[in-house]
Length: 158
Image 1 (cartoon, rainbow, N blue to C red):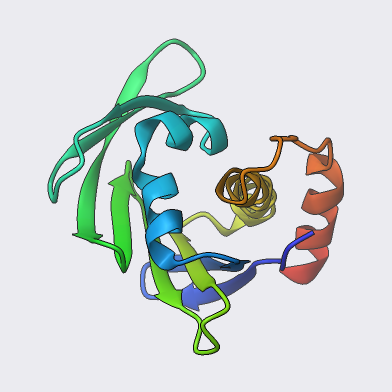
Image 2: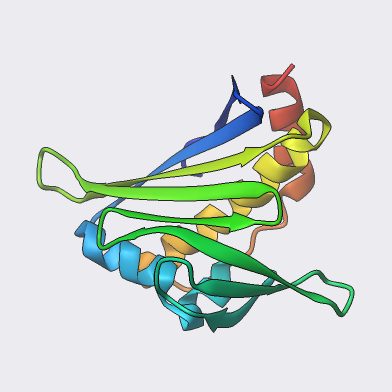
């Protein structure tokens, strides 16, 4: 299992940060994150409708039959991608590792409800594990580990 996320208190709320390492160039990871056909495979509420430009909209299903939108706030190929989803900010940055052996992605979700942190962290942990599988062109497997991850993050975020 890839690295666990950490939570920090930031202005206006909390930031969950995850790092993932990939055996490829940042361009490949950036393309996987911004390709609507791949995005829907690792981001469960995504509809696949994405207007990929700064200020463009992305659409999500709330799971109850309603759709909501996010706005792309940063798009700098292949270094960064960010969007504001409702009140939360999702930021991804990509860089080539100094050794040239691959790349690192830093994923940050800024939100305001600390009580939800263990649930949010467990969810993103699972999503990013699937993104890693997709980038590595492995068979996608959603592990049944949400409850276990929630308990780990509950302890971690005390």
